[in-house]
Image (tube, rainbow, N blue to C red; front, side, top):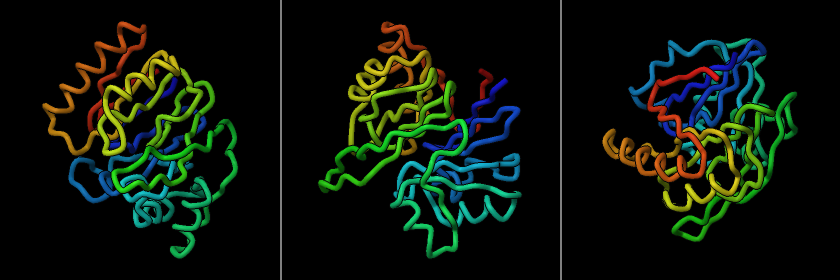
Length: 209
C-alpha cells in the first residue's frame, strides 16, 4: 500500500512500507499556516528537483534532518551547492528504487532556465519539478499546472505526451481555492478524454494507491 499526500504547492510525500519520501521542501509548506508540520510523520529521504526557494528552503531541510533519524537528501549539483553552506550533505546519485532525468527548468520571463531534475520513484510516481521536458513518467505524474514559465494548456499537452494513468496537480499555490478548483476541472476534463485520471489533491489531501 502506498499513500500519496500533498502538503502545499509542489511538496508531496509518498509513504509505503519501505518508508516515506518527501519531494521539494519549499517555503510554501514551511512558512505558511496551510500545513501543520507537527502532523508530518517520519521522513527517510528527501528528493529535491532544483534550487528555487519554492522547492527547497534550507531551514525546512535542516528541520527535517534534525527531527528524524538518518534522513538522506538528494538533488542535482546546484541543490548540493545551495545546501553546502548550511552543512547539509546532498547526494547527487540515485537512491535505491529511484531514477531521474536531468532536464532544464521551463524558461522564466527573465530568460533564465536553471537545471532541473525529474525524479521517479520506480513504478509509482514521477515528480518533474518545474519542467515539461521529461520523457518518461511512472503511472502517477505530479503535474505542474499554473506557473510563470508555462501554461495549463502546456501542462495538459505534457501529460498527454507521457501518458501516465493518473496525475496530481502541483505548482498552483498562487491561485485561490476556487482558482485551483477551476484548473482541476478544466485540466481534468481534457485529460479524461485522453484516458488520464486527475486526482484532485489540495493542501493536506491524501489518497491510497
